[in-house]
Length: 474
Image 1 (cartoon, helix red, strand yellow):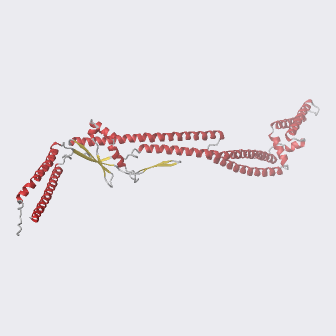
Image 2 (cartoon, one colour):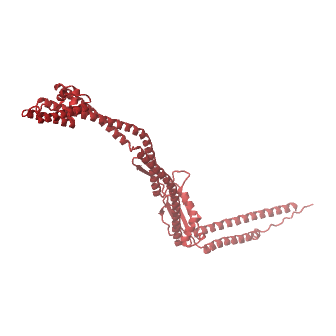
Image 3 (cartoon, one colour):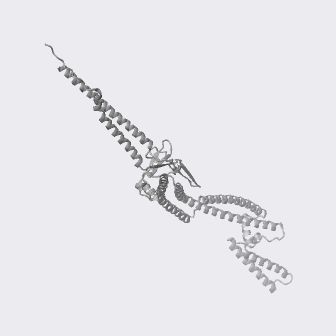
């Protein structure tokens, strides 16, 4: 028995291709059309945007100030660089200010637009530099540039406002400290002035001058004592030449210097002389002689009474004649007596001067001891005053320095690149969009082609499987 084999004919290859690739081609055309239409529509409908760029520099120089206060000391103020602290960067502060609503509001007000229309800037901080770069967008080149200038002015205005606030706060703090130190200074001055008025001690120079005066008086007293000793030696020598004791010489000096005794002595001498003259003319019992004798006796009695009163002891007529320095006028004894009188006067003067100098020394020494005890308190009050003056002067100097340092917390902004006038729009970028559309078309087309090839291969494999199955069954 013979078996028959039936062989079926496969579909033509051209028909298989017509059935499978047409839908994919249509899908590819539609997808590419959508991509390019969207890109061209975006270029056509999207309003151009212009970007103006500019940059500022934030210098980081440190400041140092030294103020010398004569006879008090010195004060200093060190303002370190804002970049000296690793966790602190003033550029970040300015970036925050540039993006803050307050600055945007100020800039928008200058442009007479709303903050939403003004927009926010793009801020870039350069590495290893002190430069901050800004970018502002606008519908046209002029608007972008005007927004940049408005933003710069707004930043400066806000920074100046913050500087003023900082200055007011610091000034208030220093004014309080200055008022306190001024009150302490005034109290120290008053205490020192009151103590000077009460104690009579004004300065240490006063003690030095007092010590110098004491030393000068001691030197003067030593000279006076030496002169007194010399005068005493001379007085003793004169008394010995006149055959008088030192006490008799002193008594003679007392009688010589007393005017009443000298007047009585003069009266006695005159009446004695008159008696000698009258005795040559009249008899001893003549009334004139008797009257003149009475005068002489009265003068002698008065002379004795006065001499006893001066010398403090009984005195005879002979002793008075011995102590009389004017008994031998024109003689050598008279000259010796005159020298004795001068020496005695000089000796008495030197004694009195030495005694007065000694009293002055004692008074000055007592005053020196008293003032020396008060000097400790005076020096303590003066040191307290100096400390108060130093604190007040230092506070005042620091206040002046801080007032002159307006860029401590917020450094100076230096614009290093003016806002430019853009020549071409920053968006949309035609080249980027066209390249994107081209790339999109290529990716879509490649994807559809790959999908079609996969489907075609799977279909061919399925047809081959079915054909093989039929042959095996036949």
